[in-house]
Length: 138
Image (cartoon, rainbow, N blue to C red; front, side, top):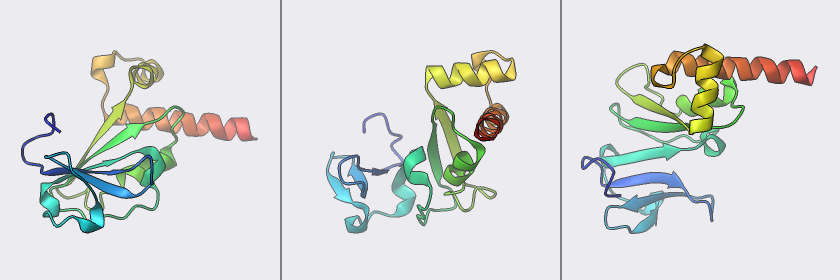
């Protein structure tokens, strides 16, 4: 928690153990989100690929989320994750994160250096993955 920006009083995430949406507070107290009474403007939301589909959280207009990029992630999964931010076309924002392996793959597919990766390169990569999967499934 010490690495989370001071604007946030907690981090919302899905528990690996219970698959329940949880919050960890700055004092490292863990609570189900339903038991937390902190203003949602003070919460940082983390959604992984597995939990993005079907998750519908009421987030403030200034919300920022992180979406992790998984191996062979397709366009549908990325869009499901990103669109958890219902007001992304206003002031909400998202950070896309991939491991070194994923980042190297994105750079290779796009013919760029690692430090040149942007969201458009991620979209090209997930589109490529979608096409590859569709061709393999034929």
